[in-house]
Image 1 (tube, helix red, strand yellow):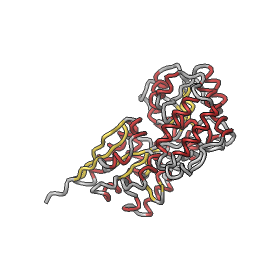
Image 2 (cartoon, helix red, strand yellow):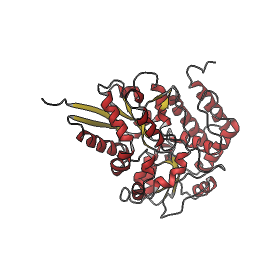
Image 3 (tube, one colour):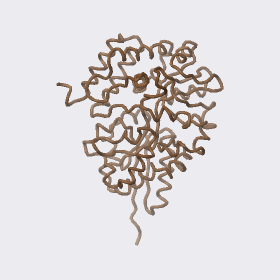
Length: 383
């Protein structure tokens, strides 16, 4: 009697970092499960950051998602909590192997909605062949004055930079109902951002990290991207014309490289899948140390597992990017995840961008950020 044929569908994002490792993992997993296949579709980085998860869950068994989406779906029954089919020991092991708050970022309302497979936060990228890394934000300003700084300021990355510097000052933005940030701290952050952005090309407001890193690696015009999400591929030999070095973020405050706005991705399972146990087994294996330290890292992946980050074999091909950004990642700040946050993220990005471009008074920008943040809590904004 022939075994059952099962085809699972997955959705990831189109960069090699997002696509190649899950495709390779799916092929390896299928070899251990006769009759099982996992077919992956992919969407752009912008689509990854904005597409509602509930739309994906209606069409796919497995999804690579961004943690800020969790709040909008946690109570809607579209994702399968991992506690349903994973053991407590399996989840505890992955929690202990988390890079910073990556595992926690997918835990909300007492349930684990995704497992981290890729860890990232805003760090520093630079061309070591052109100039050394910088340590402080004052050095970034000097580099910007000389025209050597490139900085992706497209939504949501302009808001992420605001978050990062607020956290680095020791005045992290709020994650619960109330004002996003006090006026004095908000103005200090905007002043620091504007000290750099006033020297920036307008084109940077249309750039995401991939576009900025492409330009940094392929031209000799820019030396430094001061706040940009880790993309380990640009440190690999032969990925672009020149290799990039990734190191801890330049600091504005006195607390070291802490407060960076956490990014990364997680693997989630649709509540509508006909094969929840099988999907859970794949996700647990994908996020685990065995896969992450080996196949995942070798297949263009940027691991989310701390054992991979501690591996010399994983660090060597990427100019020790994981070693050199570990402190920034371990002390990264976890942004809001409530239902209603995603709309604020878009609105907040526009407000900060207008302030940096001189189209909105800084004081008015902080007031508007606070107003829109309070309003994003749909069940409390009228109080």
